[in-house]
Image (cartoon, rainbow, N blue to C red; front, top):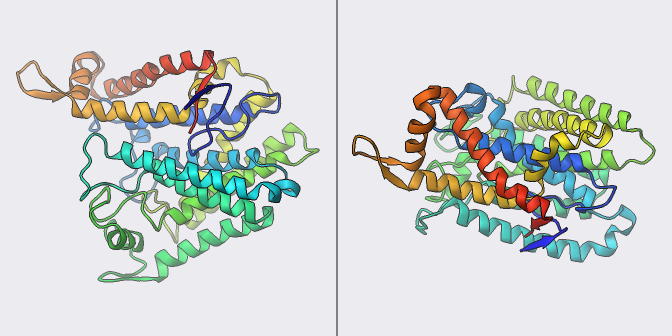
Length: 387
């Protein structure tokens, strides 16, 4: 559904009002920056030639690419807080808020399944988990938590989820492996995925967006919710707000690095240490956006990211479909052998003159710019697609 001057309310989209002087434009900029980063990471010319910061860590450890997804969930949490009425009237709207949340989460989950399995849909091997699916579940869980508890309760739940997940991974014995094993196919999260969703997982026997690891992903979203509460505290100067975001972010990063010694930072498992590290980085990046955009007023220079940030769900869907088509459409190469459209474009127009790795990055940058055109048109016409 598209509307002029209206906003999306779902996992990848803003839930605070689209217009008005109280709008937090920096959150839209941060969202757009995250969408652009997602496309940059997901669409290189060749997966064999990627600069290390843009390549996901194979297992333990992290790169810049590994913090993109947590940014989305963090943004969802911030937006949830900013969209809700004050706590003294929240109870009056609880039923309608929950009804809308259930509907939006269900639609987003179904959309994620359809998008994840495009263009072939084999029921026996249909991948059920995925990016939009995780966002939908986290969105719904956090809305339930927010309407049922105050700030202290939300903070307690956040800590509790991280501690419980840590205990599950390290103390619960996995059949055939024992407790505390964190190898790709021999950990509790993989075991739960294999038992509950056999044949419907990204890696066959486990999934990076699986069932059990949704628990700490909810905590990532709650970190955003708590950030939203920090922003809503009255009587605080913008400088104090920014310094608070930076300070809390640094603290979270340090705690995540310390925890790494006992529970490795791992995106695929979404470990508790990874939640703190990525949440701290999200706080730092958001603080920078907030200071530059909402405090210092540097909005024009951030317009490219704002364009993506105002239609994030639409650009995510279109960019993902385009990515699938690049790998599905086949063309004939110069030697008469079939090539994917991605490989043909990359080899002929990018790698041929820029080299393999630089050409692969230029391919991804071009892909981002290609989608910037139609998104800019929608932005200037004030057309925002909403779920």
